[in-house]
Image (cartoon, rainbow, N blue to C red; front, side, top):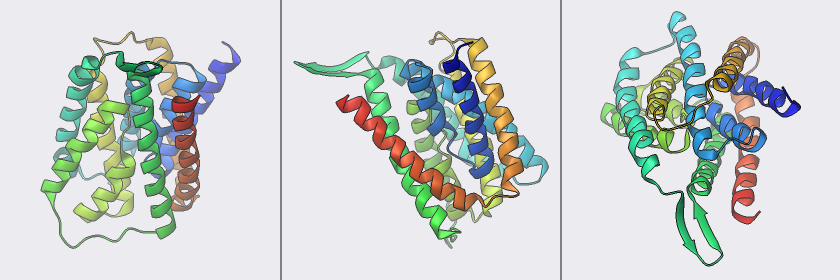
Length: 265
């Protein structure tokens, strides 16, 4: 095992720590680690990300369920539309996109480039949400509860998860607080279950179409699962909202770097 692989497995711990501490950020770390450090093809990396983040979030979700921090009625309302959308995108939309999306002269837009640029945009959006929520301390709940909006948002986040391998925790948690009047701790626990079912459903759409290295994927996932237990333990000692602000700035820088690297380098 070379230094690069060891570094990748170590960084997988951080994926789990992020999910354990703040309930999001797993996929935002996973895809860049796989693509830029472990040189995994971007399309395959988004599939791997769905499995890693889904499995890790499931472990964290079960842990939160034992602590009564999961609202399963919301999991089904939000999660079923989300998992259906994620599966359909991975099974039918992504395979339908040609390897070369556009070519004219010196301009070449590939499927991999398109996915990484889209992922960078997701990172920039996530970073702004993390920075704002981290600085605001708490999110005030809206007086109007709209479960129909939760269903629509579930579909949209499922499409996002399927397209770029992102769990969408940075969108799910505020939605649960605003639309379902959910306390932050319960929103994080419920979000982990939603991320788990939509991500694993999306990965199932890839199983028959991607050349999956199961031995690598399972070890990487195991490291991430270990990380989420570390993150959950640290969450009792470290204020997650303060960490979210710092992590948001890191994600912002990474998103800008990916855009520059993919478009100009």
